[in-house]
Amino acid sequence: MIAILATLDTKAGEAQALAGHVAALGHEPHVIDVGLEPDHPAADTPARLVVAAAAAREPATAAEGGVAALRTGGDRAEAMATMGRGAAAVLADLAPDGVLAVGGNQGTAIAALAVRALPVGVPKVIVSTVASGDVRPYVGDLDVTMMFSVGDLLGGPNPVTAPLLAQAAAAVCGMAAVRGERSGAAVGLTAFGNTHRACVRVLETLRAHGHAVVPFHASGACGSAMERLIDAGRIAAVADLTTHELLGELYPEDAYAPVRPGRLTAAGRAGIPQVIVPGGLEYFCFGPPESIPARLRERPTHHHNPYNTNVRTSAEELARVGALMAERLNAARGPAAVLVPARGWSEVGAPGGALHDPAANQALVDALERDLRPHVELRVLDHAVNDEPFADAVAGALLAHLGDRVATPA
Image: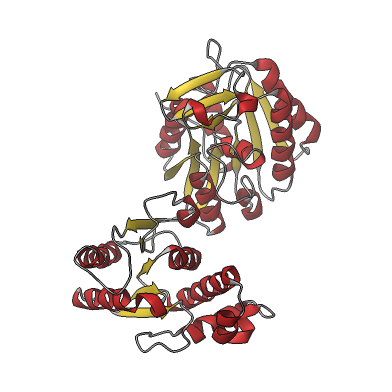
């Protein structure tokens, strides 16, 4: 089954076209109306049932008044949120093979809320009039595919949008056909370009011991995705070698701020082994140089590429990061260890690098030494993060918690 989400009071023509294409490709379409017309004839799940699903999940909300109350209540944001929650509940119950949504600004927002009910691996395609702009709020930390509609989604398919809708239907049906079987839980590994050499060596060591490894680029969305997958039981241990997103959570002007709060919490909740490294915490990440906030422009800076600029963090900022790191690791229900490379936490923060500042880094170490509880191991090693002995120490610490005999690549 392919679920089709649309506001049928404005997008019925597009939804019916998508349903026809899905059926022609051999899949059962199921149209879910997330608009505000109670019983549209094109809906398999009408809007009133979507609102009822929201009310069942969250009593004493606006959903209890039904579609009519949402339509006349005047709070458009609440109406959208209710339809998103209701559609999420419907999708969770249907467990479709894929989801195909079509919408403008409002319909896209509702669809993006709804697909959060589905796990990574279930195809999620949204054809949208706003897909050419900043789609991070819609995609978040999920595998959502956004497709720009080019023309407006108004009055049914037209010579521009008709072939795009057909292609979107073919895309989601094709994706649903090749989902494959889910493998067992893997080891999560966080990475940056500036911690690349260490990450590669840790990955090779873990694989040599028979562990599947999933690297996550510490770009905000990926770290949040790792936390989500830990909660879903798909990650069995974490080599958190690049914890830059913790800085972004405290200072959200950073380009790699997490898409949702709670970095460094899921492994502790799950009680799985985790080895933590302050990789990439020496600097903020911004876009081009002109995007750097005025208050930071006099600090040491590394131009990673024309679209990514790294600005040195201060001792005060790192002290805050250390305190938050300690607070979250103290709550861990499983084994946790922090390994700190004393000579630098990134390629550009190592001796000779533009952002090398051991005195500022020490503020984070001081906070950890002060705040970490005894059950969280803290080791400060006389290496830079990309030195092979340090990477081997990270891999060895995690393997010890996993019960493996420690060995390193030749």
